[in-house]
Amino acid sequence: MELLSYTGDHLSYFQDAVSNEAFLDTVRQRVSAKRHARLIDYDMHDGRNAWTYVHFEAASTGQVPLGTQILSRVGDPLRNTTVPPSTVIHEVDLPEDAFDADPALRRCRVFETTFALDVYPENNTIYLHAWGNRQCCLPGGATSAYVYALDPANPDRVIRPTLQAGDFLIVQEVLGPETGNPADADPEHRQAVQLTAVSDAQDTVYQQMLSSGALQVRGTGDPPLPLLEITWRNEDALGFPVCLSAATRGGALLRDITLVRGNIVLADHGRTRVETHALPEPVPADAPFRLDLNEGPVTLQCQPDTMDYSLDPVTGASPQTARRDLMGDASRAQPAVVLMARFPTGDQLWTPVPHLLDSPPFAAHFVVDVDNNGGGELRFGDGQYGREPAGARAAFRWTGSWYTVVLAIDPRRPEDLITEPGGRTRLEPTFRDRVQAHITRYRLAGYDLEIRSGQYVPIEIDLLVCVKPDYFAGDVLQAVSAALSSGVNPDGSKGFFHPDFFTFGQPVYLSRLYAAVEAVEGVDSAVVTRFRVYGEEDNGELEAGLIPMGDWQIARLDNDPNFQENGVLRLSAGAGK
Image (cartoon, rainbow, N blue to C red; front, side, top):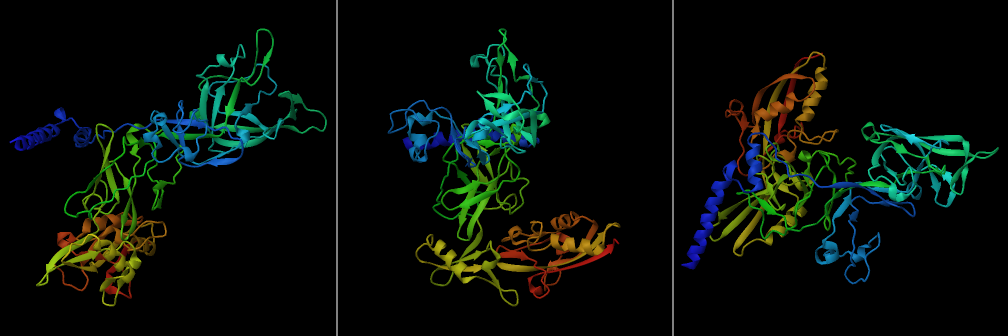
């Protein structure tokens, strides 16, 4: 009775939860609220992470790599130490479990740099040139200045700082303009700027060498003072007057009231974690697949629409794209999650999208559903909106004495598929053996296993293109042929019949074919006059608007004149030049 009561309570709670989540007024889960909002074209976002500028003081020339971790202040000793750590913590003091197991680190906030930074000692402190003015100021709204630095090997020698367009600088008031006391400096008089141009300059009044830190008038034969003119973005125009030099009430001269800090990098909040999910069995093809993340909360960051990643068997997918603009709106923030899926056919990179409604059938996309606590669940496509993680078709066949599992594979790499005369295909032997070794781990005793390629169905299409008057017909036909090819074009785009866009049971839709053709520059209109399986009679495919495929069939159109059994595309043109 207790077991039945326990089960009944769970079922009752589940029924109440389902009914509550079905209406916007009663939802309790953030994911449900987002889905309701999307029904009326409102994209509800999950916020974004914090970000900041970080200044490095360099003792020598070097590079701070992309993804370097930067911690908030650590006030307590680390494990196995007796004093708090210094500015730099060595990797040996940060084992894999340090942030979870070390009490001194659990209270820290971790940021990571968003681009690789080259650091130079002369950029630690950069001086604004006052041109000899005892009361010099840069007005609010200024977007340029003249600067110089000191030689790290000889502090009395002036040199130009090592700067270039795109670098970030921080303009900072370091002394009180009236007292010269650092404690009187206004902390609000600090602003970051990004350079747009730099150019060499000089001041012929002063010489290159300093005396007691002060500029000296140039004598005969002395080299002039080297300067660098820097210009920054209009949107970074100074929001306050910058005081460079001033005289106190007693007449004393205050110099270098405001300084410039170089060696600046952007960093945003979040710590990179690598999770490994070993699935106990292959991903099923008959139900949507979801994957829960173990770590949380999920970081949401602003990033470009396209990010490049390097794939490594140990460290997973690491971002390679530098991010130099973190000012994006929170509504455009994306989950900082990527997935490297390991298939027997090779590794594949899957990336997040806000939703799968705009994802093509074979796009390696997933959605991160963020729950009330910031945890994440990865939701994958169904083969119509986004790619299915499953990449094969299988069936059980009774041979009279036992079952044989017939497994059809659609290889990702063209070299793993061998096409024989007549259009028959088979798997490359080494690739087939690798797949079999992988699948055998899941095979039940008493079942035979047969691995074969899919059944590739050649497509035959005749297409008449009406060319716009200002275009050459030959050029447009060539562009249409590239758009409908099965390969990768010189600009990196994939043709309509590229193998990545078709897999088991995927029909060939006439509407999508028209959309691909009409997107070609110079095409006014197009008419398909033949649309069928090559070598077969018409079965109403043109009228129906699609060529259906069976569960084991894959559409193919290579348009190779030497192998017409792999698909044929005939193009003709009208109008144009």
